[in-house]
Length: 141
Image (cartoon, rainbow, N blue to C red; front, side):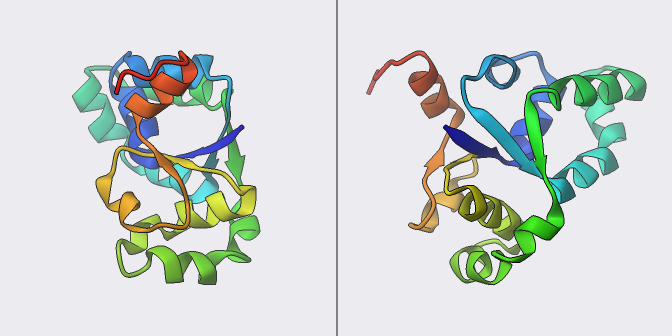
């Protein structure tokens, strides 16, 4: 299964060696992130470094390591779906239109803990907890 991960998921995996990082590295899913979001993540290297108590070089190395498990979707591929994605997510959060476009390109869900994604009903959204349950085939609810 393909899965688009949002920026906050990727950033949280950089800040702490946690379940999120484990799921990225060991995921049975094909993970994708929009190219523009990698540029955004790199803008926040200093803040991520401070929060994680790692050097910026360590953060850059970790980004490279994690990107071995995540495919980057080029911006030009997403443009074709931008209008439709904007109609779906634009009034909720313009910053997240790109993730909806990526999900439409791949016809797949998004991995995000941001509750506002669930305000739209076109693209399925999975939280980290739900990804964990799918990964370990558990239904704890």
